[in-house]
Image 1 (cartoon, rainbow, N blue to C red):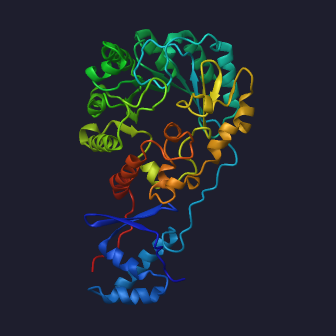
Image 2: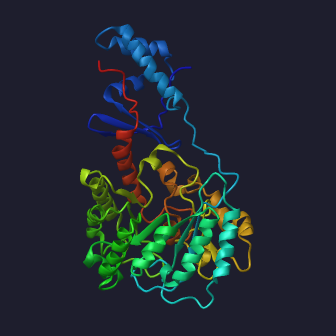
Length: 452
């Protein structure tokens, strides 16, 4: 075989390193300038011995020793699939689907009226599920799990603590079945007694904090930052592991980086930040521009790498971490693939953000979850989605990492999930950043043989 580097590889140079990435396969690696010189010889016309002779003749030192180094380098690229004919990365789709995460909205009632609420939560529905009906959901979710994979029940609302007795009973019920429980709350009702209960029942707690006092209160109502922080203080007293969740809007964008500092001070395990979803009460005036997202995320990621933040995990929109750039996956997210969400009235959806008529797959009062999970056209559409079916994404360098990003944002922008999302341009920039920031540090850096 004659070593061959596909002409499809695109090059991005920073300082002494060049990133090479092949869009159709998602393969990428780094090379120094010397490595690029060697790779230019891998044109599919020269055999290995010819390449060794040509390259070693340009190097200082023992030519035979250089040949051995070059041979190891080329074979490492061949074994990793970087050299040779690169084919589109058609990762096999799952043939079986299991529920890993189930979101249960206990009520649509909420004690806040946040400007951007994707649920538009306010008053309780007239026909909300009873506690026995919610237990029935947990039973059916359990049946659709995989014995080797943890299942999580995520309790949310509205504000789930407005139904505290139901919450405690359902979380206890799920735990008895071997499932893990997560609570998503605005924090206002986490008093000392609730904190004790939370410690005994929940493996993960997310409290919504959208910035420091002024920013948070602007979006969530006057005085609510202090009330949420009192709830967090009660969690801290009980040694409960918790995270901070933030929605990034035009009104709190400048304050978001302060959340990392706050998280450090209060010993939060994680900060989760995501751009606002334009659904529910949110409107386009709160929406960020692509440039604003890039600038803000870069600042956040820079802060996250400072020694002072080394005990806080930053998770931004679930993207841009090492997992996203080192492992190409068959699906961009779990919506309809490993995730299901239930409205407080029993409606079934593929994602917690997609409680919209277009994505309603059934209702637990009328349909068995198994039937919906296995046969719903809504769920089938998500499982059959491929970025290769989106014409606008065909030539994008980052399509194997992005997968079109959040399908809700694609739907909001274009009326279909088979389209680029609202923040497409920002993600293209940030995926490149992610590979440089994480990949350059963590990869083996398949550079060149030793310097000439």
